Length: 355
Length: 276
Image (cartoon, rainbow over all chains, first blue to last red; front, side, top):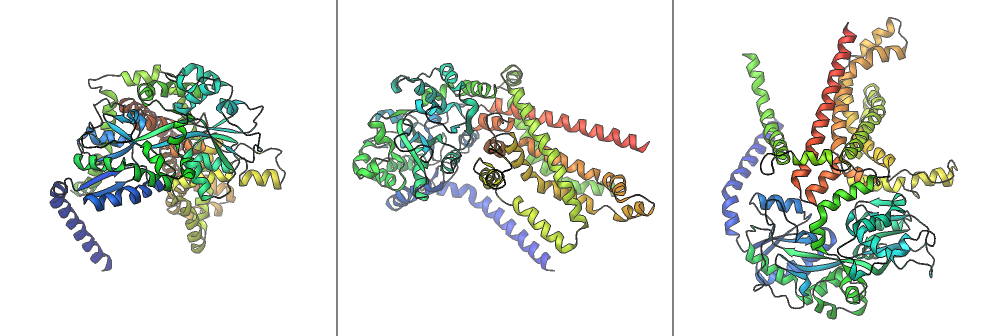
């Protein structure tokens, strides 16, 4: 008898839920117009901090509700845009996505810079379809137990020098960054990197490629460095700082010199249902003071150069934008990568699988 | 009439598979054939381009190795489950299901810790037992991928085998022994043949899962463990070339279906030979 009751109740609940969904699905979306905005980001601690430092005060000040969802993904965005059913209004996109094209047409709305104040945002980070919001640095990191003080690596040339610096190397299993790194190790100056000389870089990698641990996911590198499995690896500044924050005294350090700076952009997928609210949220997230507060909490770099003046010196030392201004980092060329990604993916796999 | 009734019972299941499986798969395959007019351009690229067939071979190799090793590991465990006392059986099932319910990413990261140069296994073998002079390369290569994959599919394999073995009438094995067969012969000549449908079902399931799996090869593999599933993921989410991604997925599907039909044909022939 018990299960009969239960199944009847379940059937009723299911029916009611379907009915409600039908009744409110259409109307609800319309009624919510401009009073909600859906933000899609990378999840984890960074997005938790975005809720605290951006979304919560935004909701309070404007009355617009921000629904934030994790796992932003370009394939999903293309799917939504192609199906004319766009559920995300603001996305945190890696820089390369902004100039990327889909076979079926444009992915992004054109931003209305009349409605979005960009005071303090460098021109290079203002694209018609996206505006920079956060900066990251992909850097050389190493295990401090592997190299005694005074004998520590300081450049990508050292990464390739296995005689002077023995120990296992790690690298992201992708052409991005590896190609830049090969050229920098050969001595190509940072301002002459692009357009990348792909074959020259691959040739430089040939000698090392069999001895590299080619990892696939960013969280792998910090833990492999901390355990001593890797002596040196590419990693990201924010992840290394995150590790040092969580595990005090972890034997890991990083090198700013010749790091590659990447920028996350805010963009609005084409066909967004809450465009105006989206522009308001974007403008909100570009503010220097808010970016400074966010940077203090996360060590994610601001895009607004004025934010650098609003943080204490100790925090500034940790931020990619600061080191970029000092000339230690090179900015990833998003347009070049977007234009060459397809052919390079093929070339990369071919090179990688060849013994 | 009764036949029609039974057929009707299949209708909801069939409709579900049609709507949520066959139609989406069809749509994906259509993307690989229309660009937007009909074209075999994407498939041509697979066969003329560099190394896509190598990647297909790597994928098949990983899947076949995983299937074979996991079958060898699962069969005795499933048999133990059948003959064990109920209390022991429950305990065994709990230990089999525990990893099954653990997130695959967590399992991969755990395997990295266990298998790496300074991991548990190598510390034990090199540092304590002095069985090896230097740490063995157990992860970020084919070995690591196979260990991770086998670990992932073994619970599925065991459960399918167990469900079939449970239905085998153990009195037949007794009868064989009564007629003078030694235990090994009774097991091999009576029990094993009766479980072959389960072996077939489990292997099929495991092979198909292994072919489409990409997290484990991506995390526990090295430079050479690039599978079709990894490429499909790259072309869909990064390069945004869904036409080519779909063609790679289509290729994998065709090879899987071809392999399965060969397998079935061989099985049927074997059964006919045995019946003669």
